[in-house]
Image 1 (tube, rainbow, N blue to C red):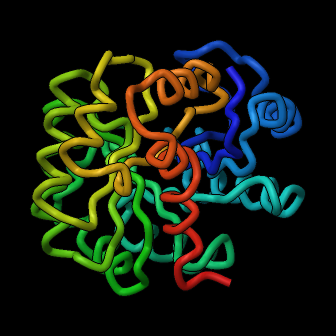
Image 2 (cartoon, helix red, strand yellow):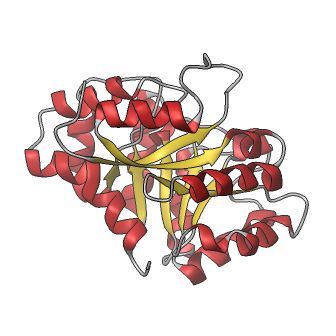
Length: 256
């Protein structure tokens, strides 16, 4: 399903995921899909960085940004271990975007998002007004959505995006609680599960201004994610915020 509104997509990837088919995964193939569906801009993080190697993965993102600067935005993916590497990566790739776009994957990096080793990175995000996309899943000991509520209160200048909003129905409820607890917390609707009426509940509880569209390209079918927003019983103004305005506002604040 093609969006009638040009989309600013907050959640995409570069590379092939072991659990999903390798469907149109090169940047050029992804651009074909984006053009077909009216996705104007896609923010990407490296699959390699999420799994095994942040420095090499971030370098892959840098190459895509060099080739297609108008169509992609780049997250700097960081691992809290080894100590000091995350800040070095943030400084090395600071030209990706200002304010910085930062990606945490506590699940694959096997470290709790509220652990001590993440504190320097959260402080960096707070000081730079960075946007931090955190992979979450319902009640996960490393990345459960409710873990982000006290973090949001402790680092109020960081803009925290609850990646996948916890995935499951219960995970979405936890994500909503986190967003209600900290006004600098945003909900990302990217995910492999679809929950009827959930988008309406999200708009009613936290407002459309704090909900971001994500497709998970190239892992998931972006047309299905677009269809969820278009079929939801929300206003056209709220749809435009979710598809475009909210993420655009976050990434353009203090930027060039």
